[in-house]
Length: 59
Image (tube, rainbow, N blue to C red; front, side):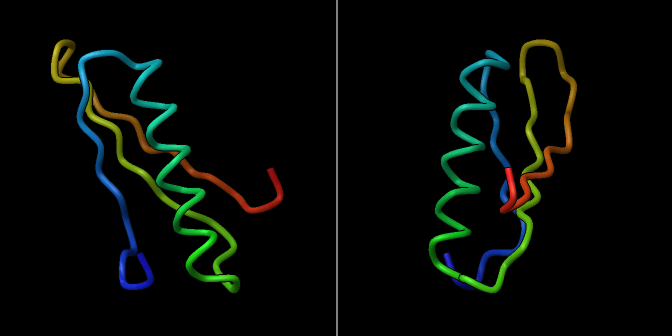
């Protein structure tokens, strides 16, 4: 996780995708204590849409 800069997650459902994205962001924060934010790109393959999710260490 230390070498990862951006995570991309693809799922059918936004709710499941956001939960998984938050898990990946938490893993990024745990692997690098100096990281202040995590960027996750979420793609819904059913609606063919994407979201850029910005997770900040402060909440």
